[in-house]
Image (tube, rainbow, N blue to C red; front, side, top):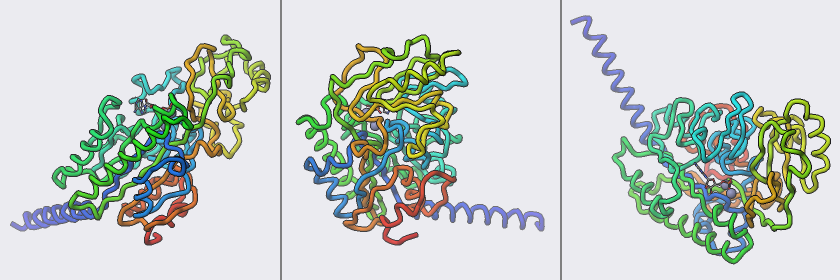
Length: 405
Ligand code: AMP
Ligand code: ZN
Ligand code: ZN
């Protein structure tokens, strides 16, 4: 009998603390983070975007969101979700070579889901470790176990399911019983980027896709507003980078200056290339790089500090970036595009958007531009949790919030 009393007390304590933890989790806010790939900061000034404007009227927006270099999709989404520059989280491009394994990470091969490439702690992993459920619809990195964690609900990457149907799925997740319902949902839409590469950001067709993606923001906002717990939902709409216009004449062909056999790895990914010298060719490449017009290049360890890039081994020996609007290709016959991004992250056309509404955000407030790595600490303050050390700074976004933490 005496022996069973401490045991019973322990069980009581355990169930008590589990209940406290569960109740605690239930008091957490809901956050839906939507990314519109390639939505440039000034599109709302150039086209009718009533639904983004409504988020601003009911919440906040930043003048623009500064992307990280290189201004490509995977590096930037992974920066948003980890608070780290690409140089620090390791997803340095959409396609890159790891010099230790000689393997190529690409969005189209199996390396995409190899956890070894992904440094840092995605925000969903931080929440899941604390017992807070998360879900992701195609956010870069969500198809992979990182830090031993993955969103409780996730989807293999797809572009075939219509965007509006994906919103239905997200709303369904928010209607699950409370113990299964995710508190943090990250959503990735491949538009307007996909269309803008093809038609260019200044074309008449650009307006159609920009207005369409804005209408999807409206659809998501309305569906969230109709949920019984709408008052505790935050909706944040961001983009990973902007987009600039290309022209068919502005092409630089790498191999016109550097013969293929000087390179250990084939290079790809205009307008940014990382190259590794074949044995004995480092100095010849260094001399030739200076002669390539409409580009800037550096030994990767000496990339200017403002780009916060180049120390990662995956940046290889040299980093080359084309000037705005120029295309840097390895073969003359590569398919032309009318829009692109990836350039220096201080070029205004590369800046993205930040809009947010929900109980913690101020109303009708416009904030100064901040960097996308600062979103991680902002998410942490919405949940009142600590996140691992990162490159962001909570002070940069605190004016977005009603009560300054
Ligand atoms: P980019 O514009 O080159 O930076 O890359 C954007 C493109 O990457 C999109 O149009 C998609 O086709 C593709 N993409 C985005 N996320 C994924 C993913 N998780 N898996 C495979 N491809 C993706
Ligand atoms: Zn993108
Ligand atoms: Zn793109």
